[in-house]
Image (tube, rainbow, N blue to C red):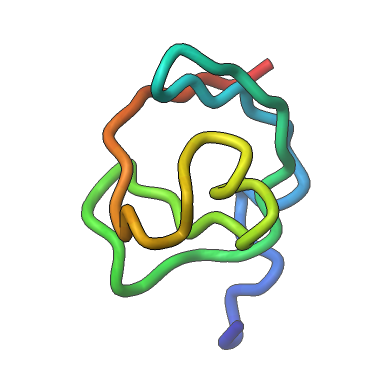
Length: 64
C-alpha cells in the first residue's frame, strides 16, 4: 500500500457497468499496474460481469 495508504479514493463506493450488468463496489487500494481509471476487480466481482477466462473487461464506473 505504501506510505500514502489509505489514498484519497480508498473506501469510496463506485457503480460499475460492463456487459449490460451493474454492481456497486468499494475502492480499497490503488492498482499500480492498471491504466488511468482502470480497476482491479476481485474474482467474485469480475465473475458478476463475465467469466474469468475473459481476462479484461471494458466498461464504465462512477462514484456513488
